[in-house]
Image 1 (cartoon, rainbow, N blue to C red):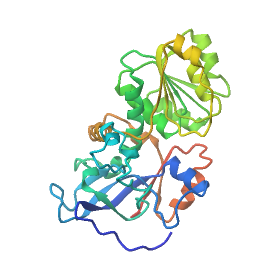
Image 2: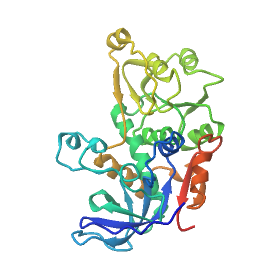
Image 3: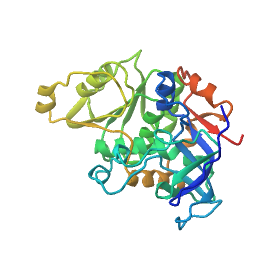
Length: 323
């Protein structure tokens, strides 16, 4: 913890007084592996109220509740046109390559804001970023009503994915993981079947049930999870690799070709997906409050990031800078 000057908005920016910022697993790993730059303020899953408006900004006012996408975008290059703003080289990303929201105030380009209805708890907007990651993966899975789906890994992104799949009408939804607390959360937010992979591997479940999956969302990064995902996907189905894993695995090309499988990587989200996530939250369509295990002060945020290295029953921790 340290004191730094309050940010001031550039002409096209606002300053947001942070109400809530979710503690993300990517931040946990960044700190654990020593990859954070000296002086970098992390935190990219946030919402709050506008505290200052840049001179060129219109349509926004001080005191207005907002969620904010951390992803910058020039909006003009081929990468942005493909909906991959996080790969745009012209625009920095909040909490990643520019100062983030484990703080009382954060500067945000106005184009990255999404308005929250005044009756919605402002904290709810802090779920928009991880929910968007999950909704992007669900979109890429191409599932529809009645499609059986496996969510491999029940960390926060896997849990948000279960909510997204439920909204898409998919089912049955099978969730597989090890953490007892997070498996309980998976059942609470919409999984039809929850597997403890130490007691019943996914392959065993598929053999006993006699059915494969139209899509598998691999959100665990567990060794061997990708290979198992490919093996339990039905002909014409899709494997979506969501977890940021360093594992290098062989791809069974014969099986992929002969079964007509689709393989796609999903990282971050498009602006459109972020707006969809905020709309779902604003209209109460996703039970995101069931994921919150703790709320901590800014002073207690560093310790909470360490505790999340071994989460046990913890699912999601929210930093509340003004608590």
